[in-house]
Length: 124
Image 1 (cartoon, one colour):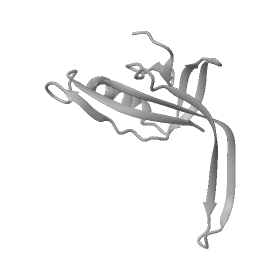
Image 2 (spheres, helix red, strand yellow):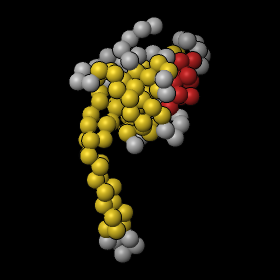
Image 3 (cartoon, one colour):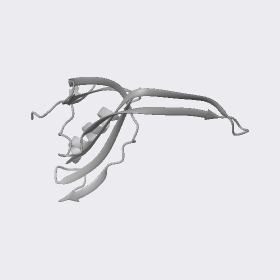
C-alpha cells in the first residue's frame, strides 16, 4: 500500500490515518514545578514544539502491529507537511494507546474486527 508519508522509526504505519484526522501543529509548551508550599519553583516555556495527531482505523492484526510501533519511550515520527515536505521529529506518545472496537464480524482479534485509535505525538 502506498499513501502519504507517516512513518515511525523509519517504518510506514500498517494503515493510513483516517481521512481528515491528520494534523501537525507547532505550539508552545509550558512546564512548571510547584513546591509543597505551593510556590512555583521553575517555569520553562519551549517554543516551536511540533505536535502530530492522527486517528487510525484498522483490523485487529494491523492494530497489534501499530501498538508495537508506538509503545516505546521515544520514536522518530516522519510525516509529510505542505510547508516543509517530508519532516522528522523525535517524539513521545503523549496521548497513550487506547484502541476502541468499532465493529466485529467474528472474533475481535481477527480481520473482521475494526479497531480505532486516536494518537498524539509530542516532540521532545
